[in-house]
Image (cartoon, rainbow, N blue to C red; front, side):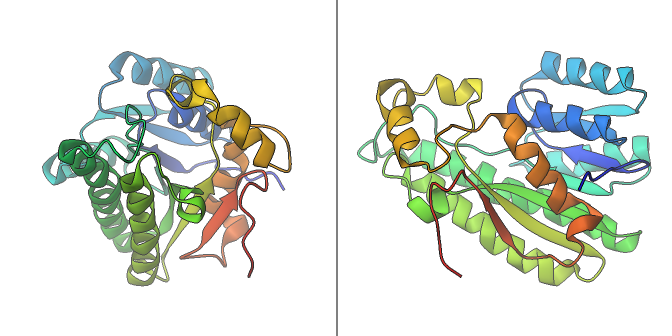
Length: 256
């Protein structure tokens, strides 16, 4: 199976760097026009947009803090004005509280930011884009979640709570936007982005611990998550909505 997105418009949040940038390039390779969103990675977003255009596809760059409803409405309006529609929304942006090293570090501001970005931001994007999708030809929304909802996070409990919230939003909007719009979440494994590599616990034994617990014996690269994301976005998964798809090398095996 090789899903293609010729003639589709894909909006990827947080695509100026990391996994979002990998996704934006990959969708362009599959024929999509891409809306590249960023909040702080302006240079990266412009570079990704240039790469999309070099593949013969259209690109549009939008800026905004997804935790702000006003800014979400502005970036979505800009996206539709420039591209005419959005067929696929990938909610990639998420806050992992990367600087937190233990649950003992109780910081209200850090908790508020994680919940605001992961829950409010994801909800705002789904609400604004999904509302327009159901007025048009429909579409597909994929939220980038985490297997942390299976394992929990003794390092940053609010991160696990936020990703649980995303599952609730996924199921709710899957019902609200049906049948024209499908909404699913990818339960991604640890991905060795620069952000993860620089995390304190990752450099002090966590990586080796995860490797020992992973049956496939490797840590995922961002490219490993592209196929599953595209599957959820594509026509190939047309009978899936409101679902949580684990892709974690077997790290957490859950029963039916």
